[in-house]
Image (tube, rainbow, N blue to C red; front, side):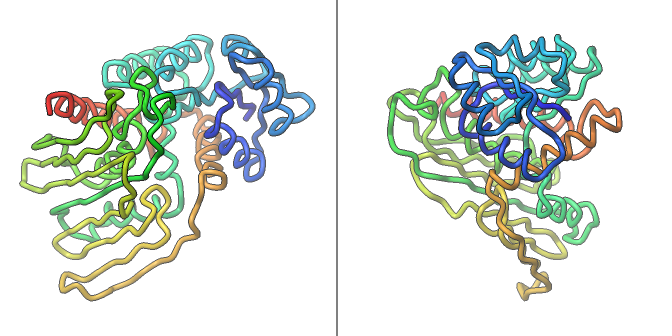
Length: 324
């Protein structure tokens, strides 16, 4: 695949490094509001034929670009995704896909009408450990899922000028880190009805920490915690009627899985090489290329209805946090 990069920031740098070293795809074009930034990115991660543009639209108009990676701040995801779809490009959008479920539905509808591939960049699901967790759930190894617990907290320096503290750019724990445990919950549990959400807000108006409890009709629950003001265990566990699966830190690229019998004794364990974004994003890029080569318009691993469900849950939590 020939990739176009929109927004040559930190995550795009990690993606490009993984893409060019671990896959056969290449970077065809880079777009930014700064020609200088695009040129520097192209020199560092592209090849002699990589084009550097001082706008996003020029990347979308470049006929050599097969698929676009949207890596701008959250607030720009929906607009650029829609423009890319309109230009006939396949699209990988950094998570969250958009700021809310209304925007997500708009992107999905546009992609389906244009018959182009669109996926939210939930790279955790494309890692080997994500595949193993999914297989364990689908196989019935754990029995009926009774409870899920997932968290992701990391301490960021308090800086009102940074993206993560800026409400206009989609800052806060929910959209930036909370999407990981929420997406994990949606992968393993049908619990989507919000029972409770509360948290702490920053002076800039974004959520600093929150806890949310989701429930299913059968009474099974999912507990989620996220924060940008404290480091949490960054782990998860799934409790079933037959066994429990522990997902050790970090939740986005677990280092180890532990399967326990119903009496608490260890039945099995599996160590995984921890994937940083710089190496792990290659699995995501390869998956996108495979889907497109097979003529798919969405991923079977990260389907669009999952992105919509995740967005809906985040909408409910955000509404409760605004009230608290």
